[in-house]
Length: 232
Image (cartoon, rainbow, N blue to C red):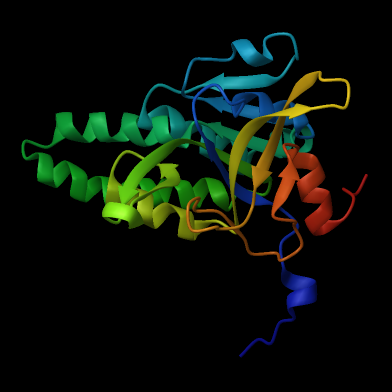
């Protein structure tokens, strides 16, 4: 039996899901990370066009796993990048589902394989020796009836059962939102922030216990708040 201590053995890498509505700035958040590499399944990098962010395109399950192996095995990549941004995990899951539907005659078999394959893939990326952010689309659902009916917001990942399983793989789950903030002179600015705590509507969570309910939309700042400044 090997006794360990949490103070020494907790990994110093942040593993997070960031989800939110369309056009809220999820991809743009990659520019707040130190030395990021975007694993680009979406094809939409216009928001970071002028920021000089490195990226690699993936269009198939084989592409995704090829990137995983390169990041896992290459000391050069590990020296070059601090953050891996999977943009988006939702699209990666859809790519896998499409391939499985082609391979399986029975759609039920495709979904059954999806529930095994995608969590295993996400676990593999999560456990890479980098800080990792999984960008997800937002799934909105109506729950309750009558006066008790409300909308809840969750990470969307290809299928309901899969969406219920994936969040348990991560320590931090943030919902990115934007709001208009007015100043004393009557002007306004758009402020983006991350919700870190579940309020009964948004499925968020902060396992570290170190974050406020809302944090600025800044991945590196959140990482520093949890682990302290990054070692040079």
